[in-house]
Image (tube, rainbow, N blue to C red; front, top):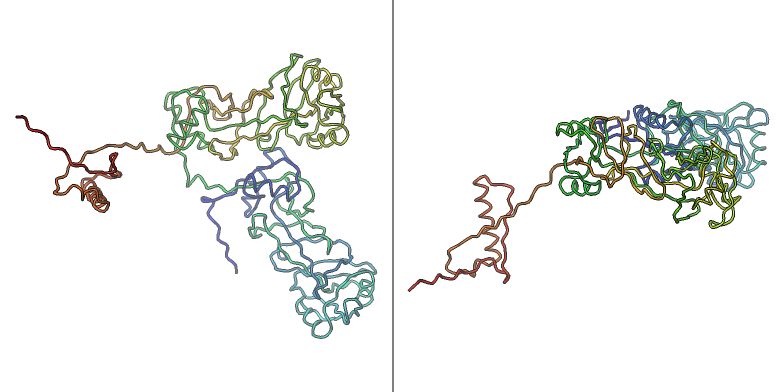
Length: 568
C-alpha cells in the first residue's frame, strides 16, 4: 500500500495558462519555464477540469501539449547496442506498465508476419534463448511460462542469453523456431520513465490511447491533450507543433488577502504607482471576483463614483516583420488609430498581429490572434521601392511571414501614402488581410503578477507607432469590465498592502554628573548606558523605540559643559 500526501487546495493550486502558439514540445517547455513555472502538470481530476476550462474559454477545440513525457531507452539483454530493424507497434502505455520500472517486449507471430508488443515484465510467457555469439546465433524456443527476469536468468544459465534480433536473417531464424500465434519473450526491454516536465511523479492516471512506437528508433513521446476529451492521455511525437498549456503555483487567497486603500488624489498612472510603492506595496492587483468586490466597496464607501487607477498595465511594442523602424503616417483616408478589445484570448498570446480591412477607399486597422487564418500581402524589392503581391491563401501570420520571405522579400510594410495606395491597388475590397505589423501583448500587473483574472475588457483606442502603453483604470459602477486608458490621464487610485510605518526621529539631550567625563565616551560604557535606558523605557510601557547615540563633529557623544560665568 502506498500513501501520497498532498498540500491542501487551500494552500497551493495550479493556475493554468493557454498559449495559442504552435511550438514543438521542447520549445513549449522552454517557453513555459521562462514565462511561468512549467508545462501543465495534472495531478487530480479537479486539475483536469480546470485545465479544460482554461482552454475552452480561449475558444480552442483541438489538441495541445501538456507536460507529460515518456523517455524511451531501448536495451537488449545481452548488451547489443547496434542498429536493428523491426516494424513499429501500438502500445496503450497503460497505467500498470507506466508505474513499473521496466516494460518488456514480446513477439507474436501470425503466419509469416510478426507483431511487436510490450507487457509488464511480471507477465508469464514462453521465451526464446540463443546459443553461440551475437554474430552467429542459434535460437532455442523454451516452452515454459516465466516472467521476463526468470526467462533471462534461465537463458543465461543454460545458453547465452535471451534472443537478440539484429537483421532479417535473425527474424527468419526466430520464425523457424517459434509457434504461430504465441506471445514469446525476447531480449528487448525498455525503461518506463514516464513523468511530468517539472519532475513530478506520474500518479494521476487516465486511460491512455495507443501510441505508435518503433523499437530502436522512437526515443520519446510527449503528451498531447484533446480539448473535448478529458478521459484519455494522448502520446505523440515530440516534434509535432501544437498550442500548449503552462502552469504556475498559486497560494490560495484563503491564506493571503490583500488590504486595499483608496487615495483620492488625482495623479497619472506612473505617479500613482510611485505613491503606492512608497506608502504601501503597489498599485492594486485584483486576482479574484472577491477582490474586485472589495476594491469597489472601498472606493464607493469613500463617496467616489467615477474612474480610478488600478495596477493593470499593457506595454505595447510595435514591430514590422522586415525590421522597418521609421515613421509611417499618411493623410490618405488613413485612420491613424483603431479600437481593440484586448480580449482574454489575445492577451494570453505572446503576440498580436495586425490586419487591414478595406471598405471602398477607406481602410481600417484591426488585430487578431496570430494563429487566425487570413490571406496576406507580401512585397518584393526594397523597403524604399516595394511592389506588393496579394496572396489569396489563408494562413496564420507566422506561416504567411515564412511564405513571403521564401518567395518574395517579406510581409508588406507601409511607410507612407504611396505605400497605402499600392496596397489598396492589390487588395480585394472587404477582405481582412495580414500585413507585416505585429505587437507584443505584455499585459500584467504593476507588481509583476501575471494577468489571469479575466473580465470582459472594453474597447481601447490604439495608435500604431504612437501609443506605447495603456494603463488600467476601473469604473466604480461596473465590475464586469477592465478599462485601459492613456497613462497620462489623471485619476484617483487604489493601492494595496499594509501602510508602511512612518519613522519619527526625536533628539533628547541627556545631562549626567560624573567625576571624569572622558569615561562616558568609552564604547563599552556607551553600550551599557543604552541598554539601561532601553530597559527604563520598557518598564514604563514604551515599545517600538530604538535608541542610538548622536555623535558631534569631533566623534564624541558626551562633552563637558562649560561653567556659566557669574556676574560681578
